Image (spheres, rainbow, N blue to C red):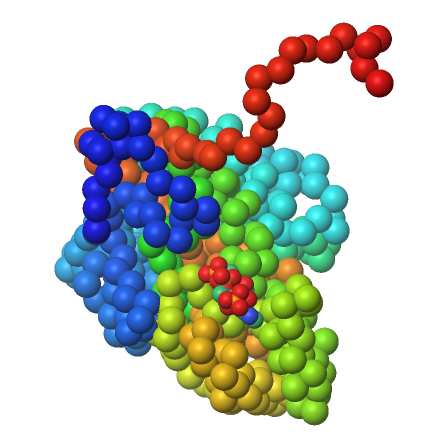
Length: 402
Ligand code: ACO
């Protein structure tokens, strides 16, 4: 690894690296990935162990603070988050300004950005206490906003948060409960929800996290930065992939048609790609996909759902992993390959899949933002470019242009 900061500024150098294939943008102590070995660690802990043994709020504490909490710290943190689960009542009016058929990711981008207008008492990024309050507010309110966006889209009244429930249980309650009716949680489903949130909590300098850091590097407030991250996550090459996987599987429709789609994915004249396959960093099986596949089987069996899309997905994976094209390019299923099937079985509509990713990733974004703000060497992010346009030329008045 070469640190070119001094070299670049002294000699006027910069590197040209479209897509940042070989550029480290920051130092970070939060998440470690070894893409060749398929390893993902948060603060040193293996993702599979966290998904199996921890809960989402404990992972939030870990990402934000660097260590796992003791029992007292955990209780205090959980209470600190639940204290903020409600959103300002006026935000309901803001929500009503959107069309009911708006994509919930569009609503989330607007609502989270709008939090800077509703919670301007914690916008001072130089005050550590206010930074933490904003972090807690974001982690606490994201499920509430996500469920509000969903309920609004189906014309149902908003379900208020219940603070005696766990984070995931409360989220499912706000999504699928109906006011004045008793809602019963299913422990297997709640655990699966928690696991999905843990698996998506952070993934170092991906497009949305880099967007959050870049936005934050100018001193922008945390709500605005997270809204920028949500916008970046929405794209089908990033968080939108889980939605795209499901529509691809539906489009394939039957096992017999898999070879046709695999052939298309290999054809360089066809823009079609196998969604949920490949990753910029992993050149091995994505460790999150392993846990996701196991969770998928657990949830479907618990709910008694026999989803033909799961069989289709497994067959597609088998065929692709035997194909030299995918083997040579080290294209394996990523975290999103199985997540859509689980979410569908739980009752989430496809349009909410990426919203769920945003709910989970908020802690990663805000932890990375906080780490950046607290780094004394932090500078505004300002990439350079290779200019390929015209050289200097004289202005031609309108009357003289042909
Ligand atoms: N299907 C078919 N071919 C693929 C796929 C795919 N899913 N992914 C990559 N390739 C091929 C490319 O065509 C390229 O082939 P070539 O060398 O012959 O030109 C080679 O593999 C390398 O691909 P790049 O696009 O250069 O890899 P990059 O690191 O830029 O892209 C990405 C990574 C965006 C994830 C890509 O694999 C992709 O589009 N996958 C499908 C979308 C997806 O699942 N995204 C979710 C990512 S995980 C996440 O955000 C949580």
